[in-house]
Image (cartoon, rainbow, N blue to C red; front, side):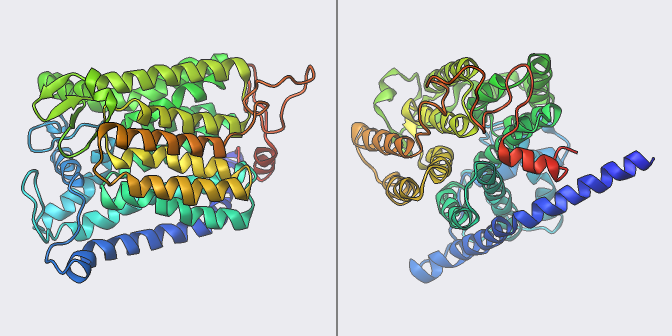
Amino acid sequence: MTGDRDGHSSSRAWLADHLRRRAWPLVAMAVFVLVSMAYSLWWGPVVDHGHNWVIPGDIWSTFRAAHWVGWGDLGGIYGRDTVLVTFPGIAVLLAPVAMVSGALGLSESVYPFFLGHPTSWLLLGPAMLALGSSCLVAFDAMAEDLGVGRRLRIVLCWMEAVVIFQVVAMWGHPEDMLALALALYALLGAFRARWSLAGWLWGAAIVIQPLVVLMFPLAFSITPRGQRLRACVYGALPSVVLLAPPLLSNWQTTSNRLFHQANSTVLDHATPWIALAPRLTPASVGAGPGRTIAVLAAIGLGVVAYRTRPSVIGLLWMGALAFSLRCFFESVMVSFYLGPPLALIVMAAAARNRARWLVASFVVAMVATVLAFHRLSEWGYWAPMVILLGIGLACGWPGREALGFAGRPRGEAPTDRPAPADGPAETPAVASSLQQGTAG
């Protein structure tokens, strides 16, 4: 009993210390929610002199699916009234909000019919924004482990908030950034040799947004041999559990949504890869082939990481490259796809030096975000995006030694090298955390 009490006390002490160290990200989250809601409610009436609130249309499909989850019909989340194309994790998280909204009789939009002032947005908006901006806490935790100074981490926090604004507040996709946050915490767990925790965090990340699987091969490369099967099982189990009901009850619709990944060629931005994409309807193509190429490239990066044993910053940079490759091979791009790679690029550049961080933040991230909203030709849109992401990756380039390609004296490893396959290694930041009871 004494050991249990000591363990609980250690966990509470670690949590309190972790929250104390994340004071600025938590403040940034609160400001992000307030500013985003102010933009939503007042931009249309005050700036555009219109009447409607500015609400991201994509969130209503997710919210409708959340209603089906709350009603206990998980098998119906991929019906025609939801147009959901991702895994069900985010709908499960928003189900309590949907049930409260329904109990209060609040109005809401249902695709394709959008209300000007849906009162359920007053509940859904803050909940969605809080979930999406939670990545700021994970970004700060990772930046701390990378050795970024406190002052720069504070500025980095606000810059990351600007990067994710279009993803969460303008497009209504909190699942992209929440899944990235869980993936980063999974990596932090792996760096501390907490393999079961890391596996469950990967499972939660994938069921919320499966595209974080692009980083999973990198995590797998540092997982000890005896833990790899468990990591795969934990990573897949939440998705298997939540996808089984809709697949069994409505295989045709569910499989079409998940495997075809339809993208509109009218609403979104076509790239040169559209010539190779299967045509699903006159106004949409399947994104599956391009994303398959990105997954294969991510597996290739995982194989390279397994062979070279990159340092922590090298592993993070390879994660940014994996997400960038997804954008390189998309047949139809949407501007919020840039959110995850840009967020990791800015973080990786901050771990190098301030000059690189300034270029990555104010030249690459800002220009790419603004340019992504312009309607251009296929090559006119795709080429600048690839060039800007390439410049950003160059800013965050950690060097050949960090990626494990440079020769080292026998037996010598970089100080922030992640755990090798036969046992964990500690970074200086991780060792300090362990001394404070982080691994408890």
